[in-house]
Amino acid sequence: MELVHCHLAKQPPRIDKLSPQIPGVLSDIVGKLMAKNAEDRYQSALGLQHDLQICLTQLRETGQIELFAIATHDVSDRFLIPEKLYGRETEVQTLLDAFDRVASPQENRIAAATSELMLVAGFSGIGKTAVVNEVHKPIARQRGYFIKGKFDQFNRNIPFSAFVQAFRDLMGQLLSESDLQRQTWKTSILESLGDNAQLIIDVIPELEHIIGSQQPAPELSGTAVQNRFNFLFQKFIQVFTAPEHPLVMFWMIYSGQIQHH
Image 1 (cartoon, helix red, strand yellow):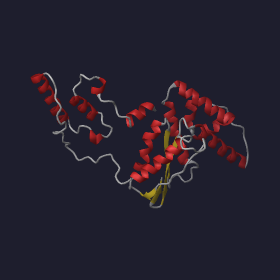
Image 2: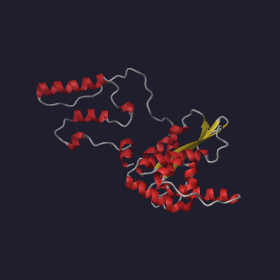
Image 3: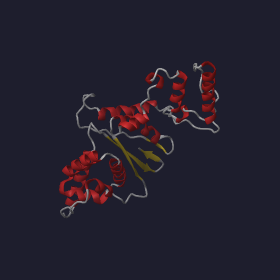
Image 4: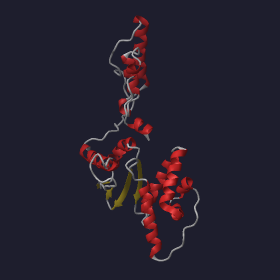
């Protein structure tokens, strides 16, 4: 997660700061190639070639490379819309503030165990998902997890459908971690679910890849079955919610023409 955060948000150091003998203009070129936003990088190989040719010419003629304005001949051959949000600064900041309150409860002087619910409503296609996705950077910084599911009109008959979809995605994230980390998750999950872990595996099959196959849960009847499952699912969720690895759950709910996130 730390590597993901560096990739998404942390600016790399200038190479001329790491090695002073490297000309500043070469550092500018490398920095532009490594820009976080695609629209800030070179848009054509010809633009990059032009700048490198100037560097080579100067080096051959004078033995050194002087500063000059880069990317002056860098023109894209196609129309590209920048990957940037406009006019949503207030909404994005509201989401970021909520995440910071939950992810750093002690710094914000609130209870150690806390959660918040945020609703983003609007018509389809106005950019709600793009706004919510802005929390990816602080989530990665905090070594947290971002999972999402969708409640739609075609799966109304499937209980917990969006929850199951989201946590199946989370299991995939956990499987990509180190053996030591997966063993830690296995221990925490088994301690939380006890002899009833198979009930969660029945709805989230990917969980079995982490904790292994489990014995069938004791049989119950009547409302006890539903009560036990609700209790277990809450305990399962709580395993992944902690200040050292906060969890952000994102659901899309379709209701007529209005969508809620």
